[in-house]
Image (cartoon, rainbow, N blue to C red; front, side):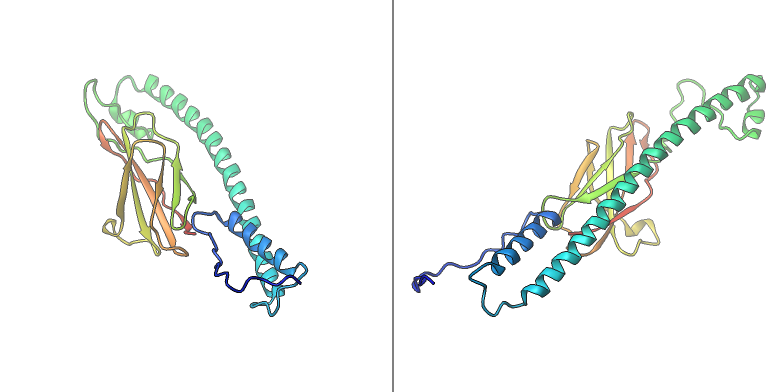
Length: 218
């Protein structure tokens, strides 16, 4: 075996910052593979078999997460399709109620519908924001948030909460006000459970907050 120059003082750099879990796993696996090649790394600590088992467990976990997220994506697509159908049915039924009401507001409310405000009346924005999607960001402690933007929204309030969810509104913290349909939340503790919710702001003011979603920060 060739002698190494003992005057060299190079050190190992893990270079994991900013990598996503799959990219980190690739580096872990490469290191184990290279350390197992001839000449074998002497007195490997921890043993290479232990490292391999840990990498395999991580790979299985990431596969399960990918499968679950794919299932959620398909369910959200199905939800949106069902919502569109139900909304059309609701609108058609509302038109039927209106034609039979002869303009009587009591009849409209008795049939389970809201009475439209007179023309020119400004009504508060009570629309609930669409559901949100959370994914791991490009660096440690970052979470990417995306949603279907309300076409009337001028901006979107993004709030966060650590686990467990707060019992009162005061437990939520405003992270930012986004002007697009996505944003990145930064500097959250790695390994913690983070809850996120959003609220659209239109010309009539803030609407209702979305249902909260959570992610484990990596």
